[in-house]
Length: 111
Image 1: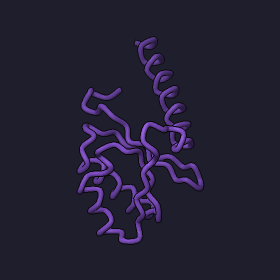
Image 2: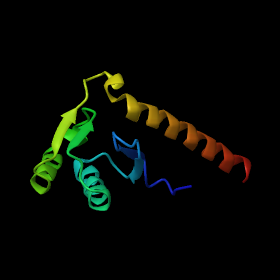
Image 3: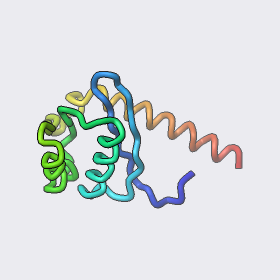
């Protein structure tokens, strides 16, 4: 397990294939999220549409800077307080949470 440095997990999911990329985050600051997105985009290619929740880390100036690097990128936000508008990612989040709980309980029983 980690050393406690990372507190959040960024979930990036391709809408068509449902392929998921997880990235550990030390904070939810826009610059850290943007750095991870640029890394994913250079690895897998930038999407035409980037859908996110309405978290401030996705509405900040740094994220808008991504559009300067990828002008064709369209940023779409989900409906406020309506996680169903992000159904596929919410399902992935649930699966990830269950996997982490299972992994963490395995770690405590083997120590």
